Length: 333
Image (tube, rainbow, N blue to C red):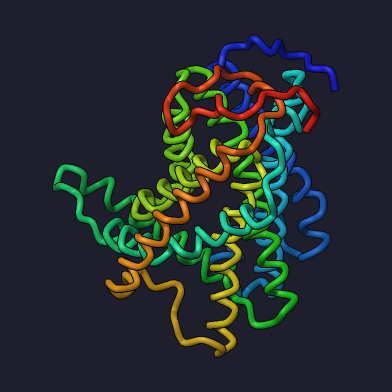
């Protein structure tokens, strides 16, 4: 597909275009649900919120909401960034990947890192969930708590996995599609364009991580989600392969879905929905093992050969983003 938007378009305008493409994706998703939702589930577009609040009134309400969530994620987070990248005239493979394929073991280790870091992250989750804001921010705190309660209700509706088919649908809608879509959008476009704008890889990673966390509109879960977003960003920056943060993101969401299924079917006793921190010894072990894995992955990813210079961004200068030691080749990815 030949791009109709110049590659030289400023990063600011590219990000504005991304917002427009995402909003367009939301309209397309709404149209698709309006056409098929009522026909498939007997729940109209304007009945979705009622189905969420009164699930007994709509026997197919949960399936309808899962269907809507799936098509919204595909249209807004998968198709929108892909269409924008192609509209700019870039080859998708060459734009999203600028290094050789890593060994499968490194990709799997990136996923394992997400599991290993969970005990340490539980401490951040607990702190963020229980923080108190100053009196002058009371109105905001009340609003944020209401959003948390709404998200909790939505999670309760989604997270009822008592059969294997329900588990598979949950993995698709909650793990697979968001992992692909959110990484394409936030790491593939937002992070890359902020890096191009600022000339600094770290700025791109953290701005994208902040945007990634903010879009979930959960203030009392903002910090741990931002940390995860930054982790995905560094995995992408070091590896030069969009598949690496996608796998890590999938493991984060999919592992949670799997634990919920095991808990709800009585196979394990640990309540994954609890915000209580894990025991201090497991937190300490998590910190040590996570640091070791990060150091190992960084060194191994830095050895991967460059296939090309990064399109749409300057070469990094900071030590953690320096890949100048890798041979520079111009092969296709």
